[in-house]
Structures are given as C-alpha cells and as structure tokens.
Length: 148
Image (cartoon, rainbow, N blue to C red; front, side, top):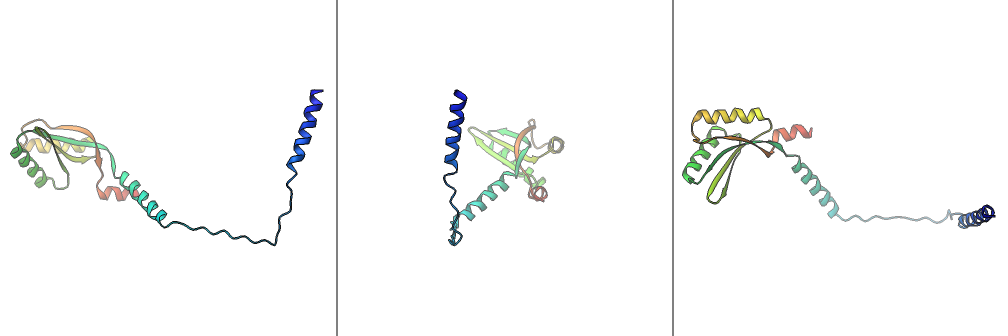
C-alpha cells in the first residue's frame, strides 16, 4: 500500500515538471547591454601593482651591526657602510635610548657571513655583528628575472 501511494505521488509531482514547456517565441530579439564602471580598470591595475610589490619581499638575512646610544659613533659606522658597500641598504632605527642598525638584504646565509667578515676585518665596529633572519627586499634586477 505504501509503495503504491508513493508511486502515485511521484507520478503526480512529476507531471508538474512538464507544466512549463512553452515554445520560445523566435521573433523576439533581445539585447543585453553591459555598462562597466571605468573605476574597475583602475582597481584591477591597483591590485596588480600590490601583487607585484608583494613579490619584491622574501625571507632572507640581515646583519645586526650596532646597538648603541652614542649618536656620533652610529653616524660614523653608517657612513663607513654606505661608502664601502653602496649596493647594500643600511637601516637605522631609534628605540630610546638606543640606535639600532641593520645592514644588507641577503638571500643566502653565506653572503651575509661574507659581508660580516669584511666588516669585522675593517675594525670599524667594536661589538659583535650578528646574522639575523629578516624579511628582505629583493633588488630590482632580481625581481625582473623572477617576473620573466
């Protein structure tokens, strides 16, 4: 009895599926016009620029060169680094009462250690120099190679 009732209900309900089988009118021509906001192109360009900027940063190493409260000594070390290694960045931050200085953007640990040894041999810095992991900015020529 249950099977016959359920079969009857399925047949009745399936007839409702064929209720809308009207033939389309082939004489009606419809046009769809899409108006695009010009700001969408600007937004897409900004997103591409942001993604390209994100590709410029990666994990690498820097040299922690100095932590001192002597401003004159910090300026002396900074000028030495800029004069002898102009291809590398020098990052100075001030956190009262200390001046902290990091040097370079190195992708490989061995490159950072090579520069550390050169700076130690020069004898300008009296304290220790540490290689610290950091987020570095890739050089423009390296970014261009990765994009190609």
